[in-house]
Image 1 (cartoon, rainbow, N blue to C red):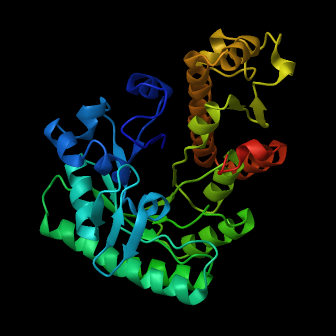
Image 2 (cartoon, rainbow, N blue to C red; image 1 turned 90 degrees about the vertical axis):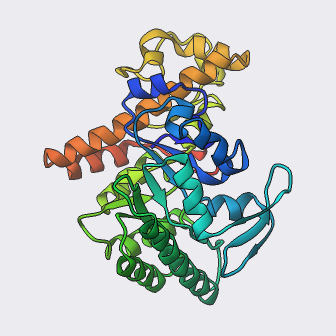
Amino acid sequence: MPVGTQGTVKAVSPLELHDLGAQIILGNTYHLHVRPGEKVISRQGGLHKFMGWQRPILTDSGGFQVFSLARLRKVTEEGVHFQNHLDGTPTLISPERSMEIQRDLGSDIVMAFDECPPHPCSYEEASRSLELTLRWAARSKAWWEREANEDRPLVFGIVQGSSYAALRERSVSGLMEIGFDGYAIGGVSVGEPESEMMRAVESAEAFLPLDCARYAMGLGTPPQMIEMIARGVDMFDCVLPTRIARNGTAFTRHCCLSLKNAAFAEDPGPIEEGCECYSCQNFSRSYLRHLIKAEEILGLRLVTLHNLHFYLKLLRTARNSILEGRFSEFRREFVSNYRPNERTSIAS
């Protein structure tokens, strides 16, 4: 899912996303609540009409942004009291309030409100946070049951538990007792080593139902996504393809290329040979480097289009390889031939 944090996937239009084959995009509850406000969006006909996107939209609960961006936050049983990061306005987001905001946005998939514990944290801290998240999940689900109608969106619960396998299992069990349409694995890629992140996913997915969508939140690099598909994950979102594009970095099937490098000053080839994206079909590495060095907006747009095309095609290829019974071969070949570097870290 390309990430449209503030009602836009940075540097690309909805028409371009449609042409790239994006099936669904992600919006951010916290950011859209802070600006322009969900009531403004609702009066404009909802987020789909507001941003000109007619395919599905998933909105996160706002929990992660509250904990990572908000100033002077205080967590209580009621919810989270905080000062927003724009102007310091005192705000409360509770499970019910998060659901109201997502309803007003007109989301197709809404996320239960959760608390994302920091990394590292003790078992006791993670356990307390998990139990609070489960109580909030029950309140999120109950709110939609009171609002029951035929147009209700899908509601996903979020698995927490930090790096503790027993807590991840407890989280899945608690969420399944409540009952959700799908299940997300949260609290990963928050500063932990990749091996620990993979274990957290494995600790959760082993207990998730086979007939519900599984969503790894905020991930990941190309090989990370392939490895998580191997572990049973179905859905991903990540700012990485658009974020590093704005730094002039492009994904290929083998590595990332920093197009700022002098080596590309007179390179007539595309970002990646054989790529069908608009950028690769029409422009050279030399031209893209020129645009990026000159700080022309077109440069970051063209690299963004390529990166989104790469991500969406990679997942389509993985899905087709599953349907054709050759995913293990595809996984082995792709991961072994990919050369990670510092540009592909989530923190980039």
